[in-house]
Amino acid sequence: MDPVQASLWAALPLLFLLLHPYPGVVRDGRIYVGRGLADHDPGGVGLDLMFARDQQTGFTLLRPLVRAVLGVLPAPEASLVLSLAGGALWLAAAVALGRALASGRTAWAAAACLLALPAGYGHGAFVFGEVLATPRIFAEAAVMAALAGLVRGQLVACSALLGLALLLHPLMAAAGIGVAALAWGSDRPGRGAAVVLAGAVVGTALIAVAFRRGEMDAEWLSVVRLSPYLFPSLWPEQAWGQVVRDLTGATLGGLLLAGRARGVLWAAALVALLGLGVSAVFGDAWPLTLVLQAQPWRATWLLAVAGHAGLAIAAVALWSRGPAGRLTLAVLLTAWLASDHLTTAAPLSALALALHLADRRGALAALSPRLAGAACLVPALVALAHTGAAAVLALDLLRAGRAAGRATPADLLLTLDLHTAPVLAGILCLAMIPLTLRSRPAQAAAAAAVAAGIAG
Image 1: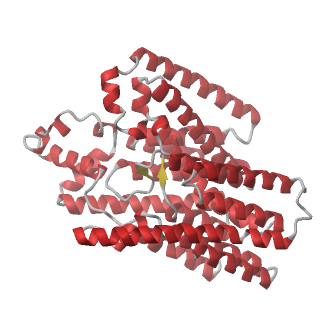
Image 2: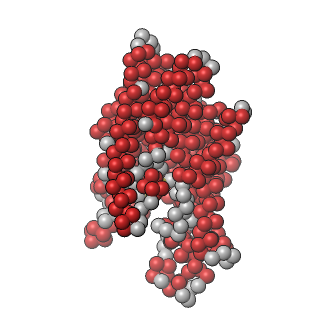
Image 3: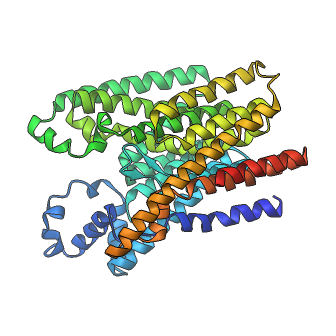
């Protein structure tokens, strides 16, 4: 490994800390830290209805770990230690997955995109890699490490890590188990067919059990619908734009890979689509209690991981494929940057896939380099417009927040994703320039110019 590449890998922890600040004992972290306090004080905190009738925290291995740490440290310090431990494991798993899917600076770019780009999934109420004292971040780390092991052929380690994820957070682990099963059979058609058949049998059995549990009571359903993230029909356009964005990244990334690496990205897309379909039919249109509790739509977290990694892999590979590849990359980046709007992201994503498939058949061999170069300016302009609008909104919110004594620049930077375009540009620039320097210095300069344009 050359010194520059080693430095890039060494910088990832700093990038992770900058973009994943510890927020304190907030959101779901309060549930699990509170549960630990209740276990230590059953006659006090334990009498609170939140914990006296708790039916959530008993399903995770994190509960005894929180209880043990609280026996040594006060609640704020215990939460910080657990959160940082989860973040460190998550970062290590992201690095392992990036290195399993690709090599060299492409692997670094995949890992960097995982930890640096917007991490929302589903309705947007959840993000992956959230540095909180919850079982989600630990389960996510176990799943990503398991898939890295699967790509490398380490089936025993993969199985053990998926089992650990299941003990930490069954809902988050379910997607990983489905992806691992499909990707394991992706290199052999017969094995793949057996996995699909077994999955269909298990899925049918689960739906049958759900029918036995019956439909949710109408009155209670009206209360549950106040939580729109459970129902795909209530998701905003932005959420569906992100699904399309991640599907495109996973699909294009898979087309440029082979073997189980391709299988992992494509299986993540398929499992997410199945989860969304089950949620739409049996959790939304025809609500069944068990399906609503299982939340199959949560499989989109792993689709987001695959989409981010696939974006980096596709970007580096497409840039080296000449004018046709660069035109495809320009369309892909434009679709990604415009993913808040489904009506824009969907046709651009379809166009990017169509261009790549046409390029693979040699249909774009005569494409003008000037046309491809001009197309590369489009994502730069989109990024400038997006970042400019977000900056104006951030200034307005900052003024209002300061008047109320709340908002900070750092909060707004991350909340409004103001860092996305510059960070994405930097990652792709650092990943692509080494490839082009070995061929033509002019191409390297062009890559830097495009990245600088995206950064605005």
